[in-house]
Image 1 (tube, protein in one colour):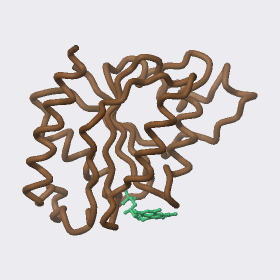
Image 2 (tube, helix red, strand yellow):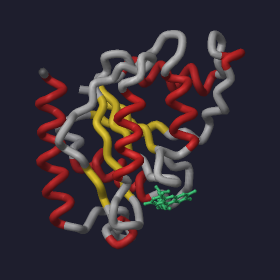
Image 3 (cartoon, rainbow, N blue to C red):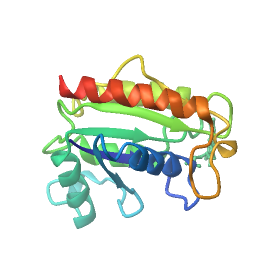
Image 4 (cartoon, rainbow, N blue to C red):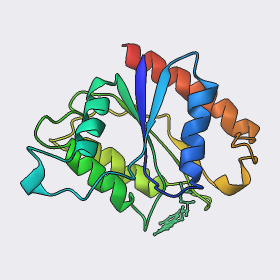
Length: 178
Ligand code: FNR
């Protein structure tokens, strides 16, 4: 099973990137996870959507080839970051590579609410006509106070979060296999 992770933060020390990498390593026996960075994705322009830049072509091809998408995103101003919305706009057009593709959402923030609003919005967006992605319900991963939960090597050190991830990842796999 091949999954791609789309991380909604560009910054070097991103907590969401740490979370994606942790998932990649901890569950490598269960599924292959390729992490896609959005750093090279230019601003969506409808004039270019039929012949997008190479970085966008590559990004869309990887999403298309994957069995599922894991979204790992911060919350910016009570919603999803602009870079993530921009990437989603590319995915939603022309060949509409997200249609029918299962999605699973998680997010990390420094605050206690751990991306609740961003995830609510992302869930709604994924139901839009150009996306049509079924989202795993009832397994919502909000990693609050995330800056206190990783060690220097990027390991998630908070035991209850790791235990919870073990459960929801199994649920995700069972759901995808159906
Ligand atoms: C934030 N942050 C934030 N946090 C939150 O819980 N709710 C919010 O609405 C916002 N808004 C917001 C806007 C902008 C422009 C920035 C830069 C930050 C804080 C955010 O959760 C924190 O910076 C995370 O660490 C960002 O994720 P990465 O980059 O560490 O993955």
